[in-house]
Length: 406
Image (cartoon, rainbow, N blue to C red; front, side, top):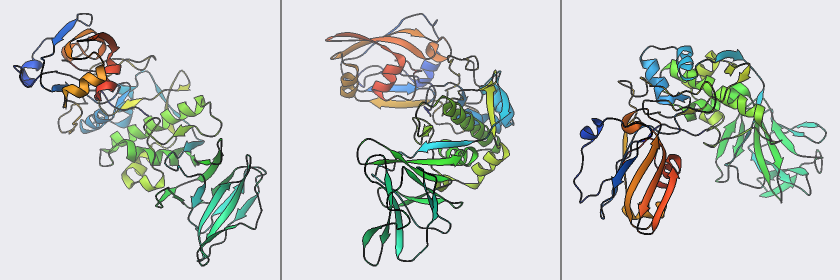
């Protein structure tokens, strides 16, 4: 969705300059959120960056959920901590997921028993034969807003039009109870539950949409967004959060043909091919459960790690507070505290002020080491100065979050 991850601590130091140890930095008192912090940048050497967390820090920390589970907290308790003031509600329905990796102009699947095709123009359905000579079925664009079905005939090595109907009256989809093997651009199959639907696009091409039951969709999300070996309570919390996030996005969808994509821009989704027993169990245990606030699905944002403090958001259930679980003993959270070295040339190209001279952090959240997440800062160089938000610098320098110090 998703956007992932937590906070950053950023130290800029030059190789030729006198360095401060991480231990000595940790003892520095956090200044007030409004106090400016000025950092002189030495004329030579790379920039060394220390950080906390990975992602925006709003809502649930995924590593924090695992830490809470290690501490004996239940999934309900974890959700109550990260989404305070919300309640559990049961929902159902389906999701329409854009399979962004299928960049071909058609929709191709491998034959299987029970596979059928539906003309979405008039809802007519054909069960497709299984034959050793047929190795692929393909929904192809055919004229304006129409499609046709082709199959690859292995003995003759050519594509042949399906005889059931010359041209479909609209878009079409593959159906059937068994997972369908979608053929990706590299030729490898990827399995999906539900239906695989063609979606019209400008020009001679189609997009692929997976229309799948809500819980089956979540089965393909949890193992891609969490770590399958985590404690059951952490995986159950992830299942509820992922299901809630998808329902909220479904309710707000403005596109006619899909609700969510399958990447980090939404939630990472791998279909049936991504499923594993531990995460499927978590989905089954929490079947249909979402979190609501005042009767509506919440925006159940989550990130990999918040670095020890959740970040405030625009809604009542996204509050800033200390998180004792993100860095919990035994959690193995490599994102709670991290270090990154950036070449001086790369930093100067990204920040756009010529030779870097100094950086002034003008505002922080006031929570945590160095005063917490950076809200605004000014970079000063040989060609002038520029003011950025903390998130802008995070993106420009490729940092894990906006909680940093120089």
